Length: 284
Image (spheres, rainbow, N blue to C red):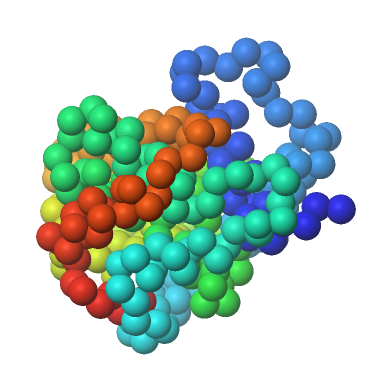
């Protein structure tokens, strides 16, 4: 029996599914397509069934109301990093890297390519929003592909068939192309499905450069940055900033390595970098 925490299993299966849909080469071999009879695929499908059933416009507004109070926990930057590590089950024989090591691998790959320091910091913090699961949020409201709510669900969203049971799909306020929005009004006026991307954006939106905030907020918005499904909602500034989102995505997906980084040696660099942009104590 698999002893991993349910959150960790869902997160790993989601990431495996992303790699199957968007392999590094950009092309899938026959072997890379997942068998829909595979129990792991069934688990991914069940995750998305719950996600697509429950991510309604009203649900998102309610979660924003609850979590934008930022009253769950106060932590220093590194305390937040270590708090995230409690998601990892050390008894798991298949997973050797904790959350800090994954984030360091992402950030170190960005640093090796000579990107600005705020880009490096973004690589290191982009998943900190997953602390949501430690505040009691269900898995389907923490990870997974993200998408706009309050308008018609695009058929480019993974497992789009599950939206048929979402009540917004039959609500005339929300099931048209624009729904509650206006053409090209900009994503800042659009409510995204609730998860770690949107949450961390809300936590850090007053502290980081605009390209960094776009990377954090939309790195799971595959229906747009891979499929261009929501051009009709995006402004010119959104299109400009999404070049940064697309630049970031390969570092997130393809920087993983079985060789763990030296966390002790790298910690001072990242604490100093965080102190340049973030407050000493962060309200989550």
